[in-house]
Length: 127
Image (cartoon, rainbow, N blue to C red):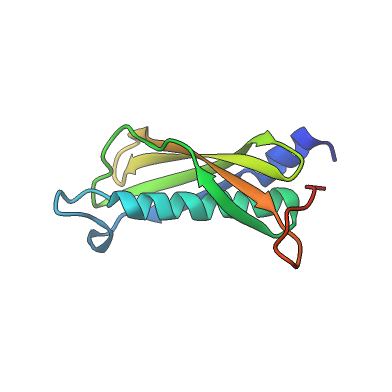
């Protein structure tokens, strides 16, 4: 399987319902919760692509374009956007859907950089 096929095969989609216990005092998804969900989606994507131990080393700018209200569904989509020797980047977009209409829009996006590590936690080549 070539890199492009592996990128497509490792694309990860996760759906979550936005419940009141994950929202702030504005009744929208707490930004820290969104970032945690994004990092988790990115980690799963990186691991599915490489099938190696991966650790987050940085997150690039995360843009919060639209608030995500309580009572909506979010879809997190992770995809490899860059492949280096020992590192890769995962772009994660969050789309917000209303529960009872077909309305869907991009709300948040960002990139996360991961490094493949060996049993001694040293960087290794991504296979």
